[in-house]
Amino acid sequence: MPWRRRPAGPSRRLLDLVGIEPGAVDEADDPAVCRQVAFRAARRDGATAEVLAVVEELLADGTAYEFAVTLLENLQNLVSHGLDAFRSADEVRPLLGPRSAVCWDTVAGFWTAVADWRAGTGAPPETAAAILAVENADLRTLLWTANRTLPGGEKIGIADAVRYEKAVGSPIPGFSHIAVALRMTGQG
Image (cartoon, rainbow, N blue to C red; front, side, top):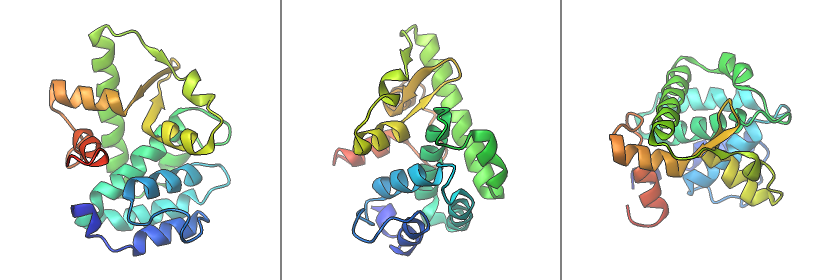
């Protein structure tokens, strides 16, 4: 599995930056590391700039691309919710390095396409209110990083991204939500 070839060092470095103790998160579980780091980096009192500086370094290493995109996507999803505890996208954007900014814009463009496609299917929009009201910290971290809130308060998430990729066949370059979903279910 290509994401496992990356040494554990960057994961530990990011976890240290956001104050997560060794052993609290499996450092070899990239999706879990990305969720936890993004959740803390998105906070107004988080180490956002420091985390984004490491992401910029990781993007220079081709083997860390998927990890970095996952972290940026999780961060983008979190800031989309418009919660007072998190920075806004407008506050995060100036903190991005040149590589991170390209990835940020690519991820944003992908999710705009997913939202447009979903609206075109005629499926009724789902409100984000239900996921934003979750009180369990672990479930909240999972749901808030896997879904985003659109400007009108609707929710789209990884299931929509997978459906979009299957229907249209346009994943984020070098990063597919179908592949991520397959790995998460042990099929990829």
